[in-house]
Image (cartoon, rainbow, N blue to C red; front, side):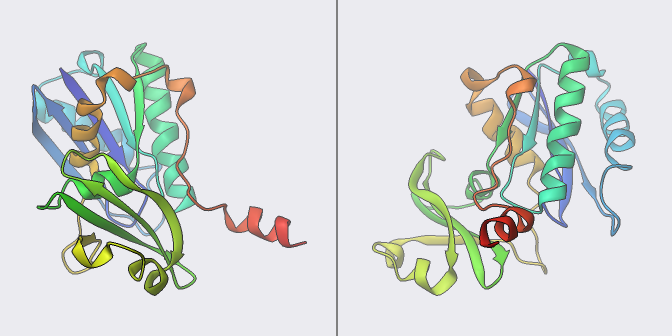
Length: 202
């Protein structure tokens, strides 16, 4: 089973290939002008390194957010396009859940910077099952919630970032029963975009 995963939801972009239960190739993506022009050449290079073709990919996976709105759309759009072209299924994986795979305990508090003084947050267990719903709110307010003091916290750190494509591929492997028509792929924004927020406030 071969899974190709793409994550362009943050400045720490990456792609990864998971084959027969392990990550066999992974590459980081770095660009100050967006990822659109980088993804397809990077995918081609990754597959060449693994000696696989696009047609040998069984499922295409993408980090579906939360994260940068443009980055989320680029990753999902590319994943949809590749899956549709190859006639293969696709799946979107929450970036909070992917980040939870780096935890060590059974109760993992996951935090991602949502800007505006807020964080995207959730609690997952060691099986990467959601324990406390994904939400966006003030960091201190969320940390003060019940049970937070008994939780291991996992968050992105610019000094030692987590590149999530391999974790997205791992979650996609766990969720094989959720592989679907790529047309059904959707973003996990958690919070409305700035434009939607502004429209609501008018």
